[in-house]
Image (cartoon, rainbow, N blue to C red; front, side, top):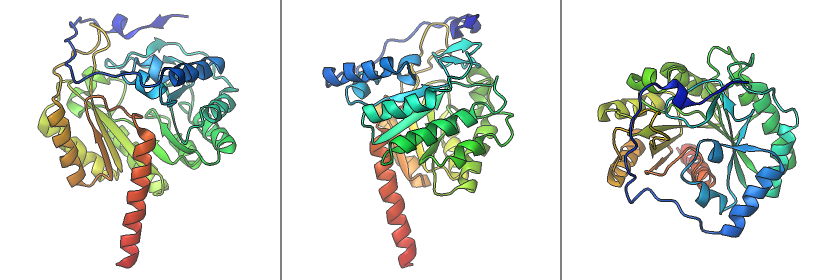
Length: 312
């Protein structure tokens, strides 16, 4: 089986800029870190923390937090910002849903995030498998809230409904970047298809929180970021994450710039003023970074809004 890495697909080479001092992650509990690692390894599971070389892996694993990546570690797409392997995926593991459920229980997760590689080779893009993982996880972890970070299910008509029908607490799909950069950065995806997916989820079940994220430093313009925020608000998205793009290798999409922490804070204020329920914006912010804490905040805000509407 041929496995293609992004560096073999992207023809240009761009030197990696040295990271500024504000982009640092640290381990806070080595015992928990290795316990998390052993549970993942013993269950033969994949995590996006490892596959995408997440800068927060030390911090999150030392807090016994992780993001499970289902349906293998080989993606059918080759997005030029991503460090996940690309090629022909293996068949689905039918035991994976129960293994995810058991690992969630072993880690005693109060909030679990489940993502996946793109599986364009499957008729439903893996939506049924997502559904099985959600159901098994909830069956074994009745008090655990479940967040999914899904692909776009592009050209898999209504496949996403299988995921929605499994009733996750949060449905996340990252729009990643502004539309002008899609052909360079995310050529296998479509900006407006991603927006429509998020909008459709909310139409089917408005009790599910919807979430999306973007990276800065790919070459986007400020006015494009603000328009993207408006597009997500129009799609009724509740939660926005904004983080710094970190170039995985010299052959990935070149890093245009490191964004200053103050700019992240400013964009957070702007996004909140536009109507997002929760905004996480910092250089190290990623889709599932502090997802448990943010979900608790989001839930409380939704309850407060509901109480205000009742009083009116």
